[in-house]
Length: 578
Image 1 (tube, helix red, strand yellow):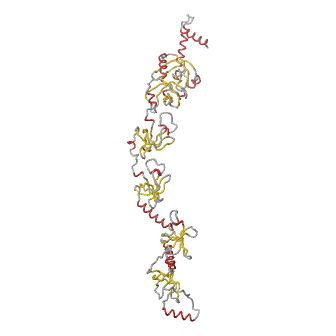
Image 2: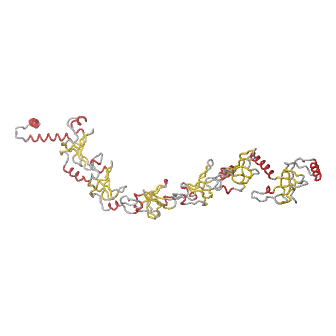
Image 3: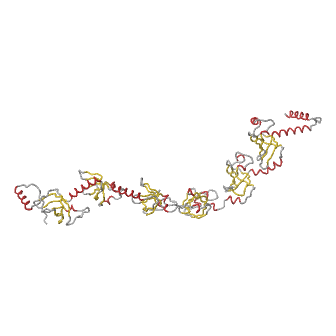
């Protein structure tokens, strides 16, 4: 068909032309077709860039072929397809009508946009190209709409260019009726869908359920597992019952894993997961598996300044403290005895199931130096040792390198003392007696000091029977009597009523006697078993008087025979001595 020439639809410039126009109208008997009218037509032919459309008139409609192109540039329709067009221009002289599909698409598209905006319903559109300012995209929805980059997705789009040409559903967030355009958002649709999926997931899940997901992110504190609409967190402490310094030791990004739900927090959209909880806790019945004293081979997993962590089985670790490496002096470093990955023999020396702590020993596999040392000793042996440390209630004595003994304060003296320092000083070498051929609970040799004076006590009791007068030194004046020193290792006690013939008060005794004074005292009573000696100043004074009387009774004056004379002589003798 020959393409008709377009004739302007204007008033005839002459009466002749007007007549011709009227005749043409009459000859074709065209139906009335107003511009702007929407008509359904059928594509009957495509010639070059023109499309012939049967619009139900005596003449056909002519449509620009470009208006039938799809978003990829190809023709979207075929011969026989029905399309909706609008009459734009009627050329009566040439006998055709110019029509437009694009104008219909724009009008219908804008109507859809307005309805979608008013009803807040999604609308399908295609991303065409970047906007002029590169801050978003132009989207074809019948009319051109703007999609900001921030509204494309929930997450940041790594490759925005890859979205061009793709179809998506959008929500119309704003419109401009004057310019027939507006702003779109895909993000709000995705957020709504995500919320719906999250709610459904939280409604379906319960604590204790097993779920399967993919590892998406590994951090210092744990691993995030994608469960669909939301990620769950497996804290590194819940990856394994064994030591996990970093999740990457056990997991890799992209791994598909199964985990147990530990906690659900719907308000904050948080799901806590655990991998190790799929199997029983290895600390159950730990006392049966690893009783104190058990020896076994285990692997060193970590070295620290204060010791080494030893894995007994996956999830069960014990600490081998640096002090339990050797019986010798403290080692310079743990690496001298243990290396990471090495398997070594150890002994369980302490178990605290409640705290999930096991203390291990290496040196306990050998006999202690003290045990070897004490095998050579017997009770009563006398040794020399160096005073290492003095405490209020005991003294530690070094007998040889690595072997210590202990003297309790009660074994320093048979009488009460306030401090061990009354008898010794740190660094001093002293003689001690072995009290037992077995060690105490702290693996110290039991020693005594006071027992060395037993011979001295025995000699004293043998040589000083009651009524004996001995020299003493006042050590302490108390409200019950006076404690006196007979020798460094022997004490005695003078009760108040044995201090003086006169009944002196405590204040008078303090005024008359001083600590450190030397004088004589008479032995009143002894208790060898309890090492007790009771003395009397008063009796010693009387004994002295009796001695003086006896001395004067044997003087040259034989005529003094009466008791009165003897007393008189004794008194005269006292005056002379004064």
